[in-house]
Length: 89
Image 1 (tube, one colour):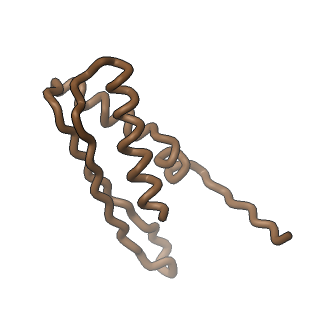
Image 2 (cartoon, rainbow, N blue to C red):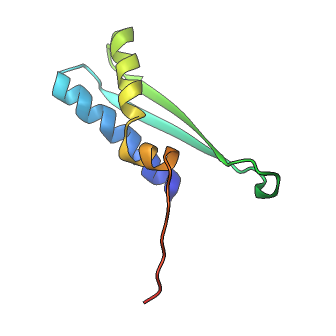
Image 3 (cartoon, one colour):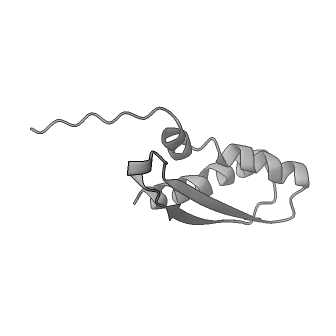
């Protein structure tokens, strides 16, 4: 479910930006992989995200869209200091 949220957010955020700028982005595809590491050895899990941008975009536009994808809210939450407080009612 976490990967689904990250994938959806990653496709929507650059699409909205490209639409706002009038850039010819025709399709965004995201392939995600979760690599689980051993918690006992202190290593973190890893997400691998491969983003495919379709359309006649310049190299500069493609780089900017990657920057924008990295600013999607789910990406920011996963890479920031995240604290979850749970309360049973």
